Length: 400
Image (cartoon, rainbow, N blue to C red):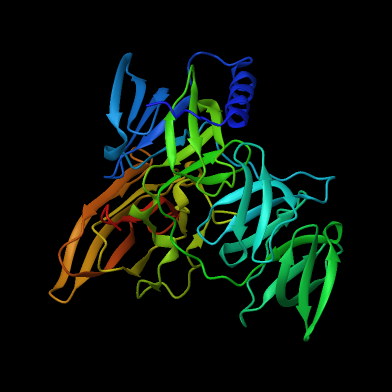
């Protein structure tokens, strides 16, 4: 059902956004991948999207799916999503990231002492509680920002220097307490600010937009043409945005269902005849890829065991032998499960040039405490036995 605004100012804003979005837009949305809860995916042409139904073309037929039966929608591999969302030249332009992984690029404004206020191009004025903010980037800075082990806030300056302390306010300037005394820093002197707030799992419907936003939305409805109406619960002025489907990089319909394996404590063990190996690595630059599930590179034969929450219901991942590894790469990948009752074997598959991609997924046996992934060498030995785990995740109950 379409979302309508009764506020004249908001209604005018929606009409303006809709008019802008309609210029030069093809009537058919671009290619997308529908990710199912079992880990499988379907490449489709997205035709329509609202709060309860996805309409798409697949194999020449128009089909529909209920959003409750879908994990999410992402852009196809042919159209990777990687906008950062900041811009150089204006010291008030910034990108604010929350502890839940949300990200809002916009213009900083004066606000209250306990929040960071930003004017977002789509959702209007957002007051983001400072104790919910994880990171603020200024201008076009997209480098790494360390987390302080002692729990202090970290400020990176544009000249490369850094400082640690306690951020008091951030609006038209930054006020930080250093060695017991407040100090005011101009925004044009800053590259980034890392706040020492603990990460939290996201919840609700989350969308990735072409401007670099990663936004939670509490209203999600069909608009006219190839547009979707959405509202952010963080907006102070009840803005309803009309966003064309071309500008939606991904949608996660129930973020609370997903737990990325990359976030969980894990142990790594090597085969007895292998003395050394590089460790698995996360392949996301900012740790905020689509659907919040970073890929993991497994660089050779090894076993990885993740400690999992007892509420988890299913594990799923797509395992790929990269194209550069397909000359000699030949390996066996498998899942297994540890519980108080013992060790249970899960699905397994052989990867080689003839079958370089496989989806591994399984419901978790009752009482599972650890999920175990093993990469074993094939008949050619360990040469080029390097795989990537795409979207490795646990699925939680829908009421989490």
